Amino acid sequence: MGSIINYLGEDLKRRDDIGYTIHKYLQLIGEIKRGGLHSDISVKPTQLGLLVGRKEFHHNLGIIVNAAKKNGVFVWIDMEGNNVVEDTISEYIAATRHGGIGICIQAYLLDSGKQLDRIIKAKGTVRLVKGAYPLSDYTFKSREEITRNYEKLMFYLFRNSKRFTIATHDADLIEKAIGLERKYGNDVTYAMLNGVRNRYLRNIAERGHKTTVYIPFGEKWVDYSYRRLKEAGHASIILKSLFERQGV
Ligand SMILES: Cc1cc2nc3c(=O)[nH]c(=O)nc-3n(C[C@H](O)[C@H](O)[C@H](O)COP(=O)(O)OP(=O)(O)OC[C@H]3O[C@@H](n4cnc5c(N)ncnc54)[C@H](O)[C@@H]3O)c2cc1C
Image 1: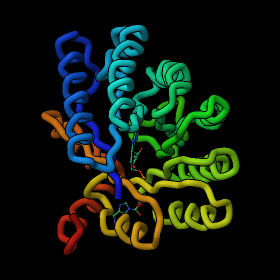
Image 2: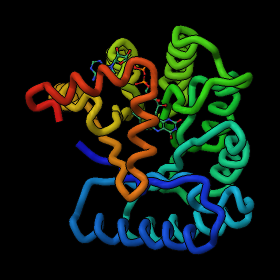
Image 3: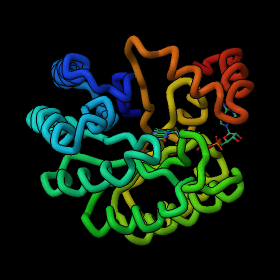
């Protein structure tokens, strides 16, 4: 199993805070290299200055991507709320020609199909999720619609992309993806958030598929945990997994 490590934090506007976040990621890249870990990192645009401006984000992302590249570490860009999606995609497309960088696409967004198409045409690498921010006029409204759109985008990826990540805990979608992987032979990684369904992820790994676990860390863990618990159905799911043997 691989891992994707994220230093928690978002919506930063003060240069000191942004600088400290960059420092933490550079430290993390060094630790991954020193430990010989099979690990990527994942950054949030608004922790690297996107709310200050695109130029600021572009510059800071460049610092991290250069350091990561020198140390053989792959960089993911997390996708945040709707107000920053367009800028995030444009900056990603500008950065992706250098390689070593991937982006998250949220299936709950009404225009996620167009976004995905843009990224695949730019030869980008995608991590497909359902989406974690509040539903709005820009999103599908029901869980069924979101799941249906996820499946549609997943099919698109199997037909149009060599390598991508299926990031969900939804067993129906995962098992469908495993079937498609056998048929099409793409390079697929299955990713889950640490602590949600670790035992199932291990089972997928034991069946011979690539897997990775997303591990956030840092001082801002309370906000992160609260958001995960607020997601429909997840409070009981997480409590259940706490009591499962080896469910950690
Ligand atoms: C690796 C990774 C990276 C992510 N990055 C981002 C990002 O950058 N931006 C963003 O907006 N969102 C991100 N997310 C979060 C994502 O958008 C969803 O909010 C989150 O994954 C929950 O949606 P789901 O796909 O698991 O589906 P859900 O519909 O929430 O859950 C699917 C089903 O899985 C089952 N299930 C889940 N857990 C368990 C369990 N423990 N035991 C039994 N059944 C269970 C339940 O049946 C549930 O109905 C990421 C998620 C992952 C896994």
